[in-house]
Image (cartoon, rainbow, N blue to C red; front, top):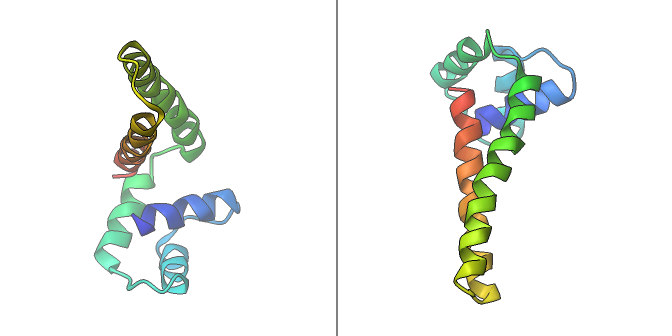
Length: 102
């Protein structure tokens, strides 16, 4: 996951997303770099338009959150249960986003 975050950070800063830059960002975070994972990510991102992938991600999150909110309202669930649903939606969104990057 840290490799995907590194790629997103580099893209946001308008830096080239390549093996050296991703490795540098991951090292700077204090994590150990797995060169095979870095190479795999860079290869997977070669044909991906990151801007389009990021723009598409919130649409999927909003679509997934709407049915969950309707179900909670229909069941008259207390606020504590609604708070438990939010992390699951966040996790699902992050899984969906990570699948875009291999």
